[in-house]
Length: 222
Image (tube, rainbow, N blue to C red; front, side, top):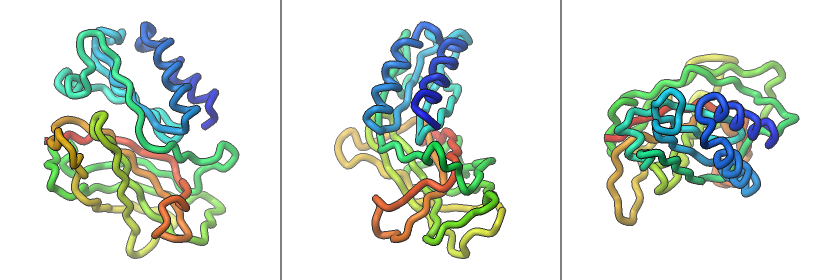
């Protein structure tokens, strides 16, 4: 998705749902895009037309919107008319002139409504290779998430049997990677993004390229 399209989506959403934050939202999105990083916005209920808190995740050129409970909004400090903005993670997106090679949908996480920090992150996602799929390297499923404003972690899962033309892939990632510096505990929602990446050398992180769209969901850490 191009920068102008992303900005337009942000503007249209704000105008329809939270016009009071439109100017600040667009300015922050433009700045994050110029710096090549992902970003999130937690918006308090006082600022939205529906009077419900919202969370916007701008990730890899896509936008994901979640409705928050008041307790979840408080974990982001999005209360009493506040909008909290955070940046995190390099924005590694598909090229605008190169559509995804794999379509993802129907993301599901086990224990999404109550995941402890020592549990493995398990779930499943449906995929379908697009016509003309051709990638000579290895394909992995990536999990990228943020713990509030504290850190950003990425995990990779290499399907042991490779990928069929289409199917439902079950995955298992390491437990939540909590910060090593105080405060070490974390309780609250995380935005979990899942997508396929391709690499010619699994040992070199910089060589990974996006192969699919992204699916995202909220996971409640307890």
